[in-house]
Length: 303
Image (cartoon, rainbow, N blue to C red):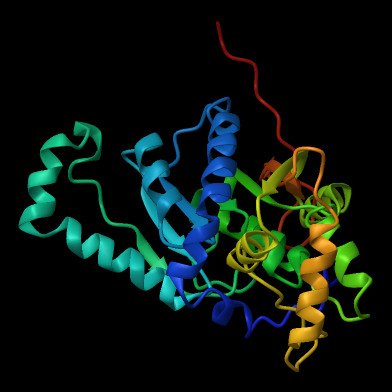
């Protein structure tokens, strides 16, 4: 099952320049904060946590604050992003970093460095049932087979382990999609997966009682150039069916003109972001590896 014909080899190249991607960090930080609010309602004390799609490590730092005793792992398809995390870790080991540690919360001093993996979310090298929490912020929509990813994440989680993720939904960039449709027939944005389809995938993967939620955010811009810059910083177009040639100056000018026509009464250009949130637990097994049913019962205690 493909969410879209995404070129997995292209995705890390689109995220190969952390400085350019940083322009969109404001949105990732906002969504991460909303995810943490949801996570704090769940009573868990994870020993091992995976941040799938960790980027330059901002969520790793926040997760370490939430769970100072946990061993963290960060995974991303972009080696350039992971390299920046390694540089941050190396800086923290310097004398200056240790001096800054005086102002670090006591719970974080001496916390182990996160292990970093550059791998496909759907085929990791991590051991089965080795994690208590899988966290993924705005990363799942870059994979063409989210059903395989869910299967892998279920494999990695221990019984009653928690999966929590966010990703873009179908109405993301709807205004930009409409503008591009008036220019040519090429796909310029991803056809993001619907929230209900994700819920079905979670059930099919064997997660229990998945909870799905969605909200729509609206970003507004003074200039179409800034809007397009942020869209590129959010990951660009990794579709294998994308146009391979240059967009061309004439079409680009038409794109800008059409975006200008979308200015609202406030004089700004709107861009919709649909954010899908999901969380689910790995249930207790009811069948053996051979397919036999497992029946659990408690003997009455002797008085």
